[in-house]
Amino acid sequence: MRALVTGGTGFVGGALVRALLNRGEQVRVMARATSKTDTLKSWGVEIVRGDILDRASIEAALVDCDTLFHAAALYDLWGLDEAELLRTETEGTRNAMEAALTVGVEKVIYTSTAVAIGEAKGQVAVEDTKHRGYFLSIYEKAKHAAEQVAFSYLDKGLPLVSVNPAAIYGPGDRKPTGRFIVNLLNGWVPALFHGALSLVYIDDAVQGHILAADKGRVGERYILSGTIDTLTELGGLACRLAGRWPPLTVPGPLAAPYAAGGEALSRITRRPPVLSWETYRLAAHGFRADGSKAVDELGLQYIDRQEGLARTINWCWEQGLLRHRPACCKVTS
Image (cartoon, rainbow, N blue to C red):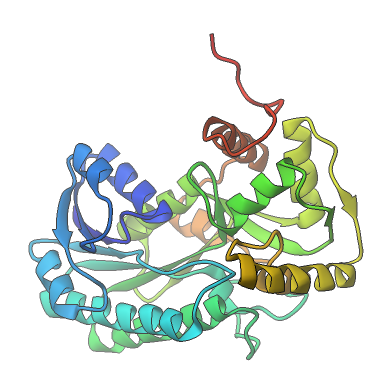
């Protein structure tokens, strides 16, 4: 395989690049002129400069590649500009798909999200679940629209496979899930509520991408989701691993004013809130996604959530993000 990875300087894309290199694949990363690529270069990755909003640069980067992993995206549940997010996701995806069609690659693996499926309240999402018809975040709205763009290229003959990861966590995560773990273990989360979240460990998300390239059926979605937890279950396990008492559990509606107030304060401080309004809406609605199709068709195996959380907590400690050494942290001589 000779693969082009967009988004290779990010959390998911970087982990994907490492995994591809580890199995002996030739990897090229398209990165913007302002992106830091020293680490990628030290791994022996070929870097080409470009931007997903510039179709010609993607075509140039795809020359001699047989596989495109389109993982470039903006992601957060706080502080994003809706117009910029929608443009980046939809136009960036259109440019990438058009370039792949023009060059004639053998496979396109498109990184969507399980959030884009949009299951109704109380429902567990599977790959063909019908969207509920309204959005819980601007991120969901943008990724849903971008996925529609990507799938429209199937009719043009593009060999597209979509992977739809749940909330990705693990070493290197500084986005909403990672921030939640850090805030929780530092004692900055005053209470938990019984909202539901679906999670997938970073290594499993990456293997899902690679297996989709190897075995995925063109035109299919593959949800990547290793576990469905309530916030109280997830938070309680993380606290037990770290050797801390978990915060109190409160009814979900009581968390709404805290999220709204934190969001308002964050507009002034420009720092992420402990609980953003969009995170609250997602968890309170319930984000439940079934990742069994990837197991059955691709052979993906999910890590035990306790092991995944322990590795994540250890990384947070090593990065200096935690105030107290977690109990699960391995002491090295």
